Length: 299
Image 1 (spheres, rainbow, N blue to C red):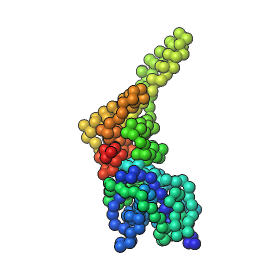
Image 2 (image 1 turned 180 degrees about the vertical axis):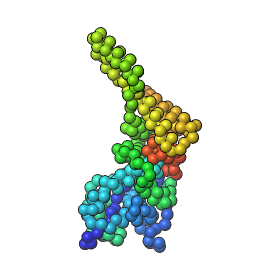
Image 3 (image 1 turned 135 degrees about the vertical axis):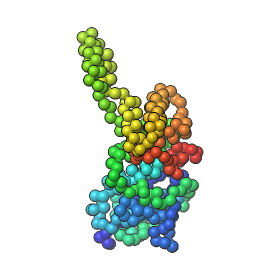
């Protein structure tokens, strides 16, 4: 067996979404083979029924590829946010194969330059983006810091939620993960500390605790500030900044209502919040061809 290997990464993504484009091998196409570049490596997207996978032509020894895997997983999570569709590796386990076949349930290393065989016939897709979009989404932009991987991974899980409401809650969680509450200004803080002291003197620890919770700005205000800063960084007009901030505040209030009343989320509300989250994660102000899939507008 060769000492150099390529990588097969099974992925989960909504069945309504896919990619189209030429095969990197010109007249040969295996399992819907679509060529693109995964960062600096030649790659291809494949689908066979409900099974999707990426082949990344790394051409390195096993240990080096295993060391690269955390970064590859992170790049896939970031690509999901750029493309506005949930994409995640379907396995964390890595197996070594002969190249004659591949384990579609696991990330596989196979001899460099070969084509592992996988065949399934049990599904179809109906929304496609050109493969160039996948190349762009998996390219690392050195000019922009990548969002925290935890937040990107949560986004990559969103479209696997069964309802618009559960997707809305998960998207809201991303904003809460990223929003950092700032302390109040000095005069306000001094006032609140006096209230806290008065509550302690009156033997009211419950009131003292309540006062301490407002020593920092509210999470709603922190989210609004986070979104406005993202809009400014994306060169949005002041009108757009106001609009995105207003959408964020409305979404936060809507989430609070969901926790107390069973009011289903509409597709418009889901689309509005998703646009805000992508602005914060990847600095994009418009959706993609996949956006209607995640927003359940094709249901």
